[in-house]
Length: 270
Image (cartoon, rainbow, N blue to C red):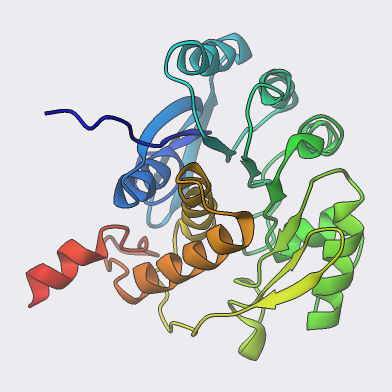
């Protein structure tokens, strides 16, 4: 017998053929939280645990059509964006963003190793067109440096960057510390325009961290779709990612993904 109602979330992101990040990570995260996941694909990547070998963008009209199809019939309680790849796709998504409440924007611009992933025109479009629609923006260390113009090495740098990025128009900013070193690794800074809060969970020592940023954004989105407030959604999402890292998957020859379905892994290991 079908459930009378279930929260629904939308991910607007790219496909990861290795299954560790992007649409695949987002939908698994939604499912873990008992949230029905819908999707709008922006690009297709050929990648595995060793890296990305090819990226193909979808036409912006196709991205728009996917979003409209979901919103017009099913509706969503929350949505997130991931890899949008180029200025045209960012513009198309921005034109739909006003129809979406609880929008989580993961500004996939720079990898955790510091490599820029989209060109300058796409970054400009992201800053001016999409970020002002965000309930929360979740840049990593290098994205926060690019958006704020501040070199980030300390907790104070993270706090200053969050406050500077807030001026771009998002309702709140979460500067992620996964790319930080030593005691700051995994420490995030959240600024909502009034309060600047440091959020931390226990650190997990593993090289298999692929998809961490996507997973955090998707978990925040899922919790928002369930009706939780933003602060509770962030805290619950951080704990989910921490446990998923504890059960990360040593697959392939490189950097494996987090274990999105860790309760099943626990059962199998018992």
